[in-house]
Length: 140
Image 1 (cartoon, rainbow, N blue to C red):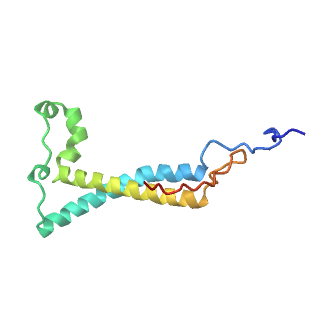
Image 2: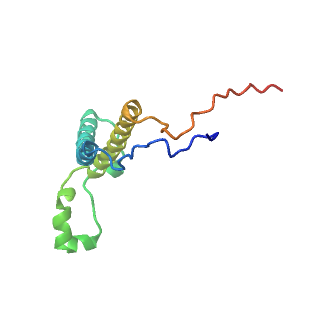
Image 3: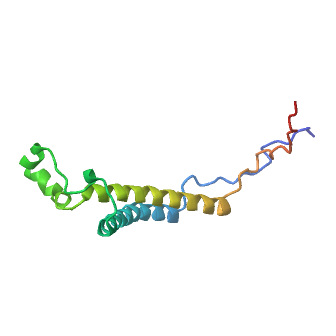
């Protein structure tokens, strides 16, 4: 009998490389829902801030203005007319992007917590256990 155990004796179950189909569906829905929620929250925040009289930089207020060549093209103006007619578009977009970053961070953190509790173990059957070593305090 040999001194070391052979790794051929340990049966390792092949793991599927793809995520579960439910996680893919949730991710797809989140890619659609998070921007919609954040843009609506940004618009509501700016409208409430203006109603209460909070200070917002004047560069973000008003309707967007494009270069003159955009106004000569009917195709571009057809696409951009909803943005052109939106009052305080830059402020609403900036607030929406901030909400999007915050919501994305919150969902990522909550996913990491859930995955840590429910996910697979850190070490597989072929991994060596972590060393039980305690460093001594260094005194000079």
